[in-house]
Image 1 (cartoon, rainbow, N blue to C red):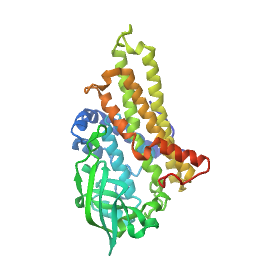
Image 2 (cartoon, helix red, strand yellow):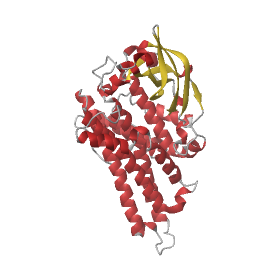
Image 3 (cartoon, rainbow, N blue to C red):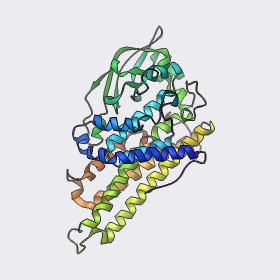
Length: 404
């Protein structure tokens, strides 16, 4: 399945780079798919996967070019996430989140970006933007304590983006923020015992009274409204809207999981009979043909929604225009719809393949567990997204969540 829906401002060079990066991801699929079962069983993405992704440049998609990164765009991140997700959902999730957190760093002041990458341009960043910690104002910065989960990819990170509240600044834009801290100042608690996306190792980060310099704090309300601290305002990628970007990045791996499920059906249907019928091949049975059509169409629909959201984000960033509330509400709706359509595509495939879908030897059971988990991320909640979008269509704005 391939859907072409490039933003009008996408240059030929950008399209060529995107195509090359997706091809690099495709070339890694045999390795990643071969490691998918141990990734799930051992609850962690193998170092071999991370090394291969890094070597291919797929962990520097959102890193500023000033530090050697590729500084691509959100459509590219989605396409790479989809391709990796066709091989392993957990590896795709970690790939997408490490890149997304690098983008967060690109919003900070120049000194904070230098702290992360000036001496170690290969540094990777995990994080949790939910304000689960507190920051206490002290001379030169803050004393930060808290517990942050789920921190996807933290086992492979050198730095962390952490959400905090500042009781001393209640009622101001600085009351909620994100801070940057080196992983060496944090501990990881092994708390990620889940059914799906087991390999993401989205464990809990713990920090106790760690010092964070003032330049490593960024106001979340400012970020939500597009007021970023980076001085490099000519860099289009770091003009993308905060919440829509954070939401759409989660859809890439799920597009891949849906595509992988359809791939399994296409591969297996001609080779198997339909139990308790006269059909020697499932491919001859109308019930399987209909399932294939519906699953493939839903996987395509998920892509269409996700790619439209990415196009809205990338176009606005290129133009230097911050999307208004209604546009951001639609992007959040698109992200939620993409997750629901991808999940439904997987469900249809599993139903078509019957109880054998849930054999431990069948990759469908892992795909099903992964997407059932990933699609329920809070920022993708389809009912909340629908309420936000429906109210915005009818002229009611800002009454459901500040995260739009």
